Length: 197
Image (cartoon, rainbow, N blue to C red):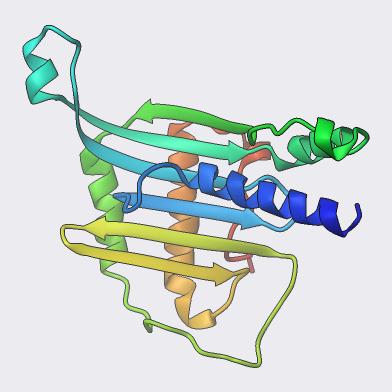
């Protein structure tokens, strides 16, 4: 790809990551796994009320829901589609939407609250500062969780910083629990943030 095509692909990747995160700005809980070369995924827990069927009382009062959503961006497939599209002149290229696969299942709210309570019992430093430390490739992880008026958003790369290992272990076990609820096959589960020792 030339420089212009790289910019096009970069803009497309940004659109894909926005779509992958979903519409909620402050989720009850969101776990993201963003590998450099494989398909990224986001798992989100959401609960609340939705409008019920038109013409019913629930249309006004709403229907309670509690669900998990697992979203995966099929980036490798989109990259192949993009490369095929590059054979056409720029003005004839069609834009296409990122391929985001979504799987949603109901879940017991109390089970998720237990996970969040375990997370709230973990104590770590709020920020790890190491200006000499950097990396490329690998995998980034994100954790977002809300409880009442409080919100936490952590992001780390691979298995660093070591001071955050308790959160990483919680993240890995929670991703396994969520993947089990969603029947995600072992071969399609994301890499763990803490490598087994």
